[in-house]
Amino acid sequence: MNKEMYTAFIEILKSELVPALGCTEPGAIAYAAAKAAETLGDFPEHMSIKCSGNIIKNVKGVVVPNSGGLRGIEAAAILGAIAGECATDHKLEVLNHVTKSDLEKTKILVQENFCKCMLQDGESNLYIDIVVTCREHSAQVIVKDSHTNIVLIKKDADILFEKNSAEISTELEEKKKLLNVKNIIDFADIVKIDDVRDMLDYQVCVNTAIAEEGLANEYGASVGKTLLESYGNDIKNRAKAKAAAGSDARMAGSSMPVVINSGSGNQGITVTVPVVEYAKELGVSEERMYRALIISNLISIHIKKYIGKLSAFCGAVSAACGSGAAITYLHGGSFEDISSTIINTVGNVGGILCDGAKASCAAKIASALDAAIMAHSMTTQKRKFQSGEGIVTDDIEKTIENIGYIGRDGMRETDTEILHLMIGDEC
Image (cartoon, rainbow, N blue to C red):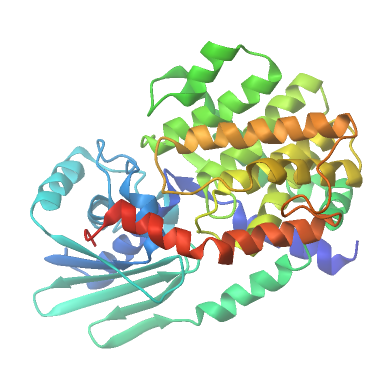
């Protein structure tokens, strides 16, 4: 592996494996609102928000962290403006220090039509445009293409900051073009552990901690606890249950942070927790676990680069492909074995719908991981789905491209119809 590719893969991991508090879409709205309020210089008298459909879809049903159980765009934006104005450098953890008075003020403003939400058509799937006003002054902040990617800051008629989002995105996307399954495995085998240790240590620490929290308490539909109570504590079930429990807690508004993957905390949990559980079960070295986590993270990012961060294709599937690949790697699997596990996973659950962030995300994680673990078991028996069966081909990269096409283009109309069913004329 040449130096350019090695450096690119490190940079991809650093850009994608970042901490977030709660669901990333409410976090992005809170961050943008905090930045807008900070720019305005006074607390707003009114706030208006234009969001892409996928942002609305992923905020509608999820609890905003540290909000006392509040849900929705208005709650996330108002709480961000109140509590996050002096903490904008915390980005997706901007709601980390909400006070009781912040919460009381937010609840009042939610009821007073302080904030108006509108659907923004014709923009990218990840788009947030917030305008705040106070007396004769206004401030505007636009976030686009990734959850903390501010492309415009404006006060009154003055543009304080502006950048071409496409140029920034293109630089990272160009690096991602170097990703393929073979290169990812080669990188995992030779990467200097000290180059990735800190970010992987933190990912393991916080993502396993929220999984334990989800098992210790009642959150959402308690999918993780249900799995353990119903099907036992063997490694196959425990890996699914702990990952689902992390999502249980996160979707229900737990204030514990996670390290995300491809812009999603649920995907971050899914690529981490099962791999850690299997590494413990197999008694492998810490170094081997780190290398497996590299595979899990980068396979998920590789698949998602074709789909996009937000779509009607459930990201638990791409993340579970990463976990399944890493589990096969932990068992000593070759490139061909890892490819087989990915193919067996998408040949099974390639069509799980994303209908917004909510409690059932935990169940979708469990289902996707169940498919990935079965895919690994099939691989160990030298069994896999064959070329020509649906979207599966003999070429792993072509199969992954097929997944991307379905998620990005094939399900575009489905995404629109899901949004229509969820929100009707609300926005």
